[in-house]
Image 1 (spheres, rainbow, N blue to C red):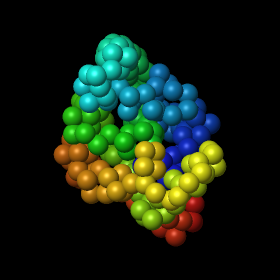
Image 2: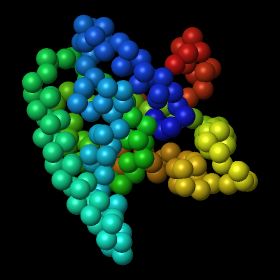
Image 3: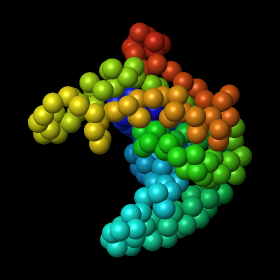
Length: 193
């Protein structure tokens, strides 16, 4: 799910319990990161959409992104081929929730499909009013001074439109592959993530 939905807690659990999970048939790819899988989201970013043709520094950065993406894809596939076969592969990154362009989500599907597993996209969504307040609180802790308004890095109208955010995921993975939950303690088993 997006930021502020327990992703850091989940990622820490996966990291701390990697061996125990492997013994139970769950693998978390090591190449991507020891803690989270943000690199997977970076891997499928649309280089053209990331580039600004008016800024040469962005064009150089885009060329580096394209080269890195090709290298990462090969290393990701090599790890998948050489790792012990696991019944389940688990990845977690709130950065994946920021993949809203259909091409990016389709590239993610294409990266994961050859692993040979049934793919399920699991996301917890916080009610939008709570997401907005939580995002703002986080920014205040980081030094933000100013009014409560939507803007870059703060949950705004486009980010909070869950139907629009999830549409590319349903198109790429199929609606039945989506497993959505509400991020509220009362909705969780034993009120715990």
